[in-house]
Amino acid sequence: MNQDLSITALVLQASLVVQLVMAGLMLTSLVSWTVIFGKLFGLRRVRASNDEFEREFWSGRSLTELSQAVAQKTLTAPMERIFASGMREFLKLREKRLDGGAQLDGARRAMRASYQRELDVIESNLSFLASVGSVSPYVGLFGTVWGIMHAFVGLSNMTQVTLATVAPGIAEALVATAIGLFAAIPAVVAYNRFARDIDRIAIQLETFIEEFSNILQRNAGQAGSTTIMGQQGAR
Image (cartoon, rainbow, N blue to C red; front, side, top):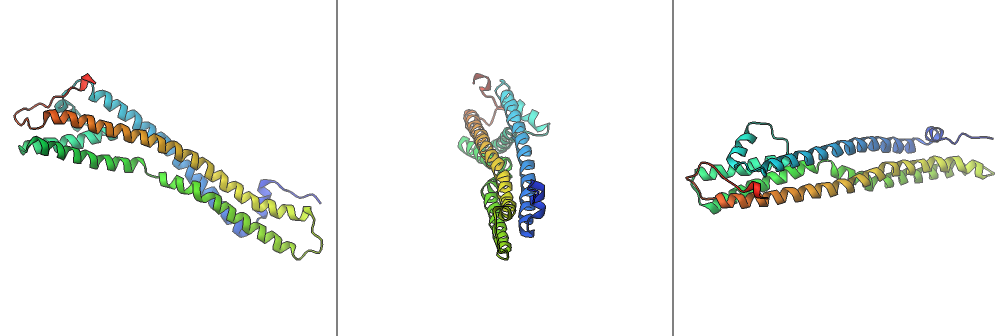
């Protein structure tokens, strides 16, 4: 007797538990792909906006002029927001006529706090991809084990067991493992790619904080000056 062993037929003929496992894995895979595409375009925008602001920062303008320009627009780049928080704190402490060390320490603390907030936003949903990549194969394996167990329980009532009677139940169960791998593999690949990209962005932001701190150190303590200069163009 010919049996329909297509993927659709195997899914429809599977037991309820296996079908629930398959449905959960497919839903997880759909959400995972949504996160992957969202993170892909999001990191691309972050890199582009950071590069644009970094070019503007090293264009040779004074920090005072750059700070005024940043204050008049919506901040889109993480590096831009780090600059704004550090500059704002530096100017606040400068107006209080604190010593240069206190001005620099306050600006660095503000930039570090802003850096952590930006990194938390950039790393959002990354743990979800890690969880999908590590858990999905085991969920699929659970569906496979349950399906095989269910198939053998059904075969126990038969007097004659052949490969034709065993194959459909085993195939139904193995579909769950295949779907688990289908959900896990893209999530693992994407997680590794995004983790590497985020590390590069973090290094770029940390380097900017150090370079900006050096510029602020040269200007710290100059309470009488209204313009904060820097050698941005000499990079």
